[in-house]
Image (cartoon, rainbow, N blue to C red; front, side):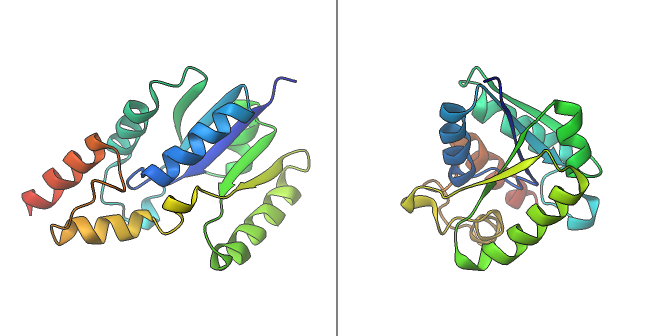
Length: 161
């Protein structure tokens, strides 16, 4: 079966937890599309172009993983990409309510689109992009939580201030 899985998010920045899910999904699906949302309402640290570039760089070793940017509804992006599955990471019980609401909404917008939840490996369950930004802002060591290029870009961002 030729299933395309769409993994959407802001990825501000992409973390080892995100990469863990991407790698695991790439073993389950022949095509994984990492879809980076251009959500201006979130006021991201990294620009849309920077987030696309970082995600492309850290996933380039995986042949059937591609990175795209999108605006608008996730259901529409999934349709444009021919995706049958939306991948979502679920780290904690606290994630469940929001993810359940989003999956239900997407089911109404695109009835043939299934949402699949993946739990990250145990060493990544506590990693979130917002926590990584906070650690980096105060010059903390994020090397265990993000790929090296992301660590370098975080360092550069916060040394500019």
